[in-house]
Image (cartoon, rainbow, N blue to C red):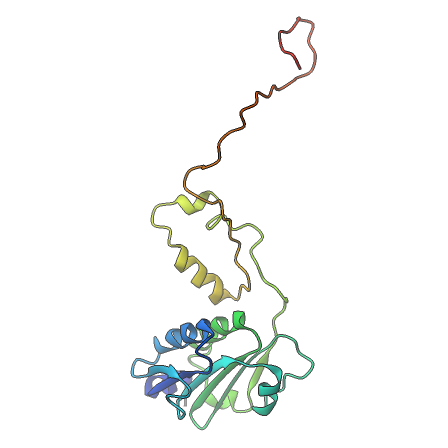
Amino acid sequence: MKIAQLLEAASAIAYLNDDIPVERTAAELIRTAAPKANVTGLDQSPKANVVLGVLDSDTAKQKGIPSEGREEWMYARIANGAIELYVSHTWFLYRLASRLIDEWIDEDESAFADGKILQAAFKHLRPAYDSLLNNHARTARGFDAEDHIREMARQGYTHVEVNGYASHFPYERPPQENFCICSTPTAQPSTNSC
């Protein structure tokens, strides 16, 4: 059966930890491909069709996830019509959920029967220059910062640049001192005091 068919038939999507907001956010993302499913905590829906969450190394070992020797990992397994998505760190969960519905949606569930463990190529993935959040592009008409961050999370970014002083106009007062710009000396006398 295809993953799309599993999601269309799903009645519940459960997240493990109420205190980790990205778990609910990732569950809501998966719900876009599973219109009949309710999103709840695992304690409220123990027989959910989709379960996702952030695991520590001990819990990962208990669940049979081959994460030994890996500091950062993502894991997907589909068995008996149930989809499991687990990650080592919060910043991977939205990316893994996106991958499920964007890239793997037409895959057969048998490809995930033994589980797939994925490891990030970089420990931290952050933009080197984010002109949208911190610089000139944030003033563009129609710019949606929340959508921008959602797209960065979908692409797997682990960090976002934030400039606490970013605004549409400067708040800072200019210096009260006078500065002069000196150029190369000329033959003409100057009134400049540089």
